[in-house]
Image (cartoon, rainbow, N blue to C red; front, side, top):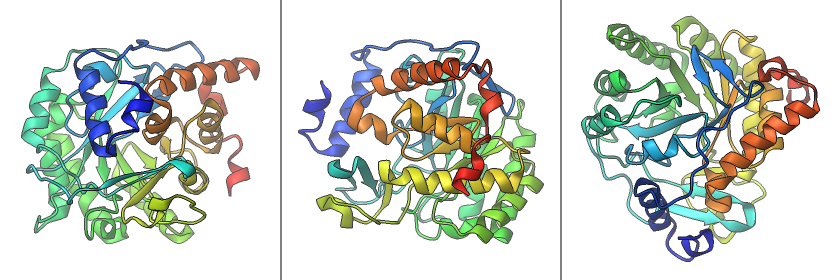
Length: 347
C-alpha cells in the first residue's frame, strides 16, 4: 500500500498496516547501508551507519527482521511494560500534515515483556544492533521497579536498552526525571543489568521540556549512575507555532516542530556531559542535513520515526546516503570527527 493510500485511512490503522507489510515482506528494502565514513562505535556497539529507528513504531517487536534490512544502522523497539496493557482510548494518534508533525497519546500499549521477549529471542542474528525501550505499567504501584523487571525479562535478547522516563502519556512518569527518583531508578536498572549473562549498554531517554538546571541535574545523575548514554529527546508537550486542526489534541508532539527544541537540549546535554557519554539525537530528523546538524550539536547517532509518516520508509536510506555524501564533501573520513563541533550554535 502506497503512502498516499495510507494517508487516506485512520493514522493508527495505517501504522498497523505498514508494520504488517514489513512483516510479510511486502515492502522493498535496501539492506545494510554503510561506508568507512558512516561506520561508527557507540557505547561499544558497532553501527553500520548512525541513522536509527526510534522507539514507538514497532512497539511489540513484530517486524524486527525486516526493519534491520530497511537501511537503519540500529533499531529500537518498544516500549515494553512488565504486563500487557491496552494503552489509552482511541483515537490516540493524529497527523498534523500542515506542520509535518504527529501527536500521539498511545500510553505504552503493548503485549507485555514476556511476549516481546519471545519475539526478540526468535529474531535472526545480524549486524544491526536491536534495542528495547523500557516502560512502566500505568497502574503499577512502583513504576520505578518496572524498568528493571522488563530488563530482567528481555535483556538477554537485545543489544541495548533504554530507560524511558520521558513519555508524557503515562501519568507521573516524567516525575521520575528528578534527581532522587532518577538515581534510585537507574541504580535498580544497573543492578539488574549486572546480573545479565551479557551486560548491555543502558541509555536514558529524556524529555525536551526541561530547563537548563534540570538538564544539568540529569547529566550529573547519568554520569554517576554508570549508564552508557542518553537519548535526547522524547516528544514535547509544547504546541508553539502549530497550524494544523489537530494541534489541540493531548499527547506528545513529534516531527518537524520538535527539531530546534530537541537539538537545543541535545547541545546543552553535550556541554553538561563534556563528551563523557555518547548522545543520540532524536526529534524532527527528516533529511541528511538535519541528521548532520544533530551530529554537529553533539550526537553520536540519530533516530527518527515521524519522518516515515510523511516520506515513507525510503527516507531512511535517503538520509544515510545523503549523510555519507555530506561527509565526503567536507573531506571527513570519520563521522566521529564531527561530533559536537558546532555545538555553540545551539547554546
